[in-house]
Length: 129
Image (cartoon, rainbow, N blue to C red; front, side, top):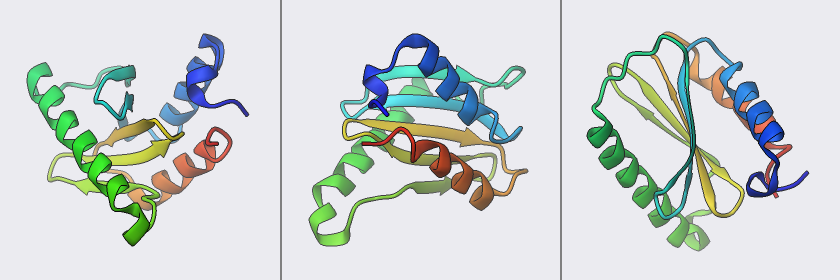
């Protein structure tokens, strides 16, 4: 399969829908480049934002910075397969998306994160190069 940044809009929509459909506990699906620029964003219908737009941008900038640090030491610790940030009110799972992007999936705490992460990894396995 082609890397995500080469897919046509129809395939992007199909991919985002496939991730959103993994669980009713998914709040957001976001794709960021490793410079912190939002590439795609999908929000589940009816989701109420917990952070302001400004707070979200700051939080995701720190997320991307942390991911980039992990990449800079990957020769010593290995490549990150995913990270899971668990908070009282939500969880955020981060996955490498190709070599230059990051898939961020925000979930509420009602679901089974291990099952959700495994299902998303299965979807990603067809999209990573």
